[in-house]
Amino acid sequence: MNDEKKGRFETIFDYVRTIPTGRVLAYGEVGQAVGETARTVGWAMSLVPKDVPWHRVVGADGYLRIARRATELATEQRRRLQEEGVILNEKDCVLAEYFWSQESA
DNA sequence: CTAATGACGCTAC
DNA sequence: CGTAGCGCCATTA
Image (cartoon, rainbow, N blue to C red):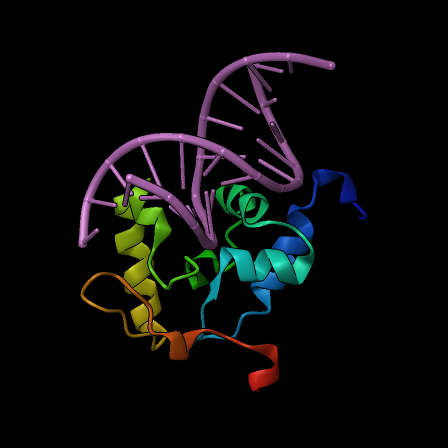
């Protein structure tokens, strides 16, 4: 245990795992919560394990920033979100009401 | 140590 | 509304 040498990812992964179903968060929001920047979060997402709901992480404006690099993954992410009850706009944009807030519940 | 990259965020044009 | 550039930080070569 204690493999903290893996990097800062562990902190980010742990936070993403705490995201409830039907809710989403932005890279910057997660980064701010763990004390890292959006860049670091985005990097961690590329190495995120399967036990982490990476599909619940979207852009700060609610759009799937991933679509810019991997449109195929964006389609899969969009499908997963809808299965969890998250509705997306015609532009693959998540409604602000789906953004999760620790103080909101 | 330097250079390049990356699933970001924002401003500028 | 679309594209480009800068900042910011971590990882890899």
